[in-house]
Length: 238
Image (cartoon, rainbow, N blue to C red; front, side, top):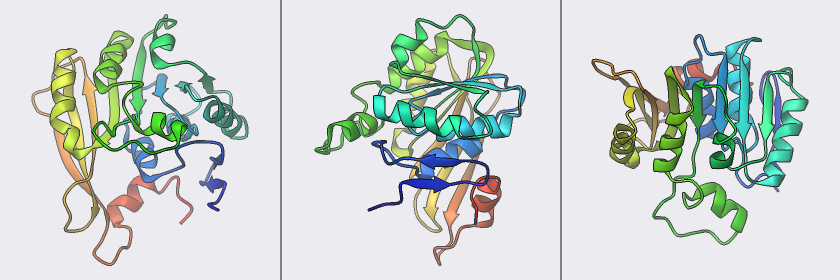
């Protein structure tokens, strides 16, 4: 049986009741996203609450984070993880679909993040809750971007982690919503391999050119790279 919790430097994530466990994708997004001057953030599909907690840690005491989750067990466990953390006063967990939540929003967000369901064409796994967490049937990328654009501040940003093969589709969907790519990082799992994930940030404000880079997670000997350690050093224990 897998460990029911994952210990970070400043908080513990329990994930035994969550369909999707703590993984590299969420940690990368929480460490990579730009939280500078952000006071009002939204995490769509928070799952365990990991990314919301990482943003609260990085953003300081003035940052407020709303976190939305549809699965009742994950929502309850996210609330417990937040409550047990030093950032309990900064994060509010909402048991709603993103579409339902968006209708209740009365203030724009400086930052919206999501580690979204993205296995659009893959064979669905047999366990229903994991299906919802991993597949895009409940919330497509097009809907996520369009709804996010409606509740985003004029100078706000939307940050996602996606399969690298969805890069062109993400750029196309964002353009249809009036969003411009301002930063992207190609995530390479092991030195010498092709990119597997894409960290990407959009804004309503056009930029002359997007800041583009790459991040290699492990060297040829399967050791974490210096760049990966630097990015996640405030969170991982080792």
